[in-house]
Image (tube, rainbow, N blue to C red; front, side):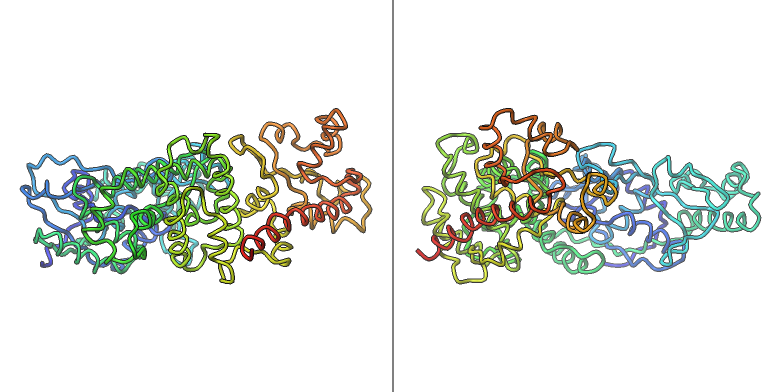
Length: 587
């Protein structure tokens, strides 16, 4: 291994574009965000060192021994996150990147590609939430960011068209069309950038500096490793990837799994599977860490910790052989989650799903487990267990210490989900399922928009069919709760602080099906209640189902309503949480 003659950024980008530079399967995917990319370009413009690179030379007759991927060019946070598999004809040698992928990918996207990420507070499933952005450089003034001198930003085309006396956005990729210095001058003249006085000087210096950085300065300084031993390459890879944006341990473990699977491509299988389960229902947020941990757990390995020893060749071959069973069990568990009404916003612990996966796997449950009447009792036990595990945060801290005893119980008793035995096994430990009075009172402090609020409400609605879409609804519409509106509705001024402090909390929330919730919208609760419940029996049924107290439900009586509904909910929580759990644990 030795240093080679450094090359320019333009040469490196051309090598990436011509697929001469590729990524080995042991490499992780893009993890840098746009801020890191912008800082990289700023560093280059300021002549800051960006460290050396490590390349791996692979001869054409050895290429088929490994799997390689192309650099990603047009990154999309939802639709295009994965590197495409390289289609190699085997006619030429290639160079694979062992260290420097994030930097080279950033240069490639900045000069030839795009980056689309979700705008704040926009819906995950709306394509318009992800505008395509390219990298731009302001030629008229330096950055206002104290961490940057040059104003590099990823902008949409609409944002880049906003030009004023202090701003002219130059698309950084256009520098590739200005290879000669006179072409840089022509660009400045053609775009009338010489009319801004002192700012014209900054524009001239900035664009010429960018030209030098891309075409003249030999910035890409790299080692070239020519040994084709995968073991050696893997060790080098692990050593050099300890800096920069830190590799998660699962990145390295996935690298090892990829290198050791024989028939399947571990990286491709795992990433595709993660995408598949995340697309179920309204979407989830599982990742490769979750899948790798599930592989260890479901394969019944004694040690389920994330460490290299557990990802030895024998274990990896076991996982590969069981891959279809493992993924089938996980997929069934995720469909079960969806049937309970959970999604990426409300599932507060991915690890909590693993015992469900193991139970499905161990019992060999069929695909219709989620729908079949034969398994209704089983599904109810799992749902109650899951919700309480989430609210008690049982899997926080060191989850392996909880997963191991739960797996042992399920392994020994899986004719039906052993809810009671799990609760009994954890009694008296910091992971107990039992709730005391203070913990029950704390439930009322969950509010609209919090992830735990759905689980807290779901406990109170055990009979709902969550395959229908349920929304968390304000009983008294939140649009009513401003000081002026409350005064206009006749609420006395001494009550208003209480109203404003409590309308968003649990006692004013209910679970309502999507269509009725849309119909209810901002309608006064009393008016809506009397409209949808025509008979006295319908009114009594609604009140019982939603724990509505038998009090005046005018907005002027909101304080009494909250007090009485809290009492009803408290008794129900005690029945569900304190009394039943304690009875199970201490019978």
